[in-house]
Length: 320
Image (cartoon, rainbow, N blue to C red; front, side):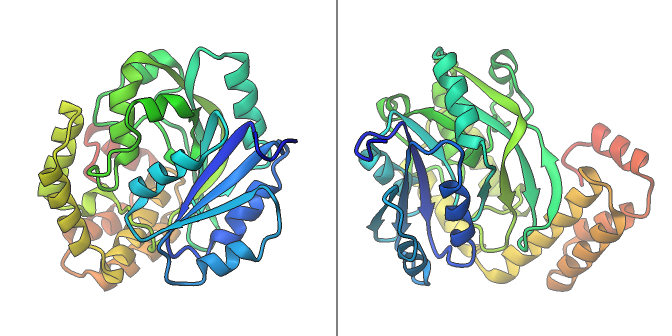
């Protein structure tokens, strides 16, 4: 292996990820496909993130740092330093399954007409316990092309893509606060082939420290701006500033913990029917936010049979 010319750059932005990043790094270093660099962008962390990164002594790890500018800026900074032609996105709180890189590299080199390769994912809670397996709404390129603009076609930390494609399209838009990946896809996929592999290749960790919270916990104004910019495939600096301001107001641990427990409760009803675990999480969400009526709806619905909940979700998607 030539460390100066790796076949894949695993691009990992990290901000105050000390609690989970050691496990994330280990899962990358243990990949069956070894010809990669792990490029970690320290986005101005103030915890022990950098110390944990430096505790690993593997020549494939490359650490670069910037002041805290957010995930989109960190990704763009990383893209300018990436040495490989393929980028494997990965988050500092997730886990790569053992053959993730090999499977995606073999696919994209066997079928070079494809530009973006995603996958299914196993979701886990903050402690690493399995919650459910998520399959993207589109697997074949034809299915992905037919998705509505409101549907993000990929789990971002599961994708492997051609670096030059993203760079030539301007990289990640730094105004698209928390949906920089979704905004990228609506702008590039119309001219590219893409797919999602049906097998899970990563474990995604739901946790209250994440900047991304359940869509239902965002304000109506936030959702309105987000989906209008996705529909128009353009976003202004003013719109980006407004999204950021709204998001920063919700960036309290109490809100994020409430959103986290409510989401876990929902998934234990809709994706992996375990009503007792669902109620346990929803009760925690209610304790943090007793005036959110949707939590009481979730709690009530948890006493109904699985078939009824599935039917209710099918006829009224987004209500639970």
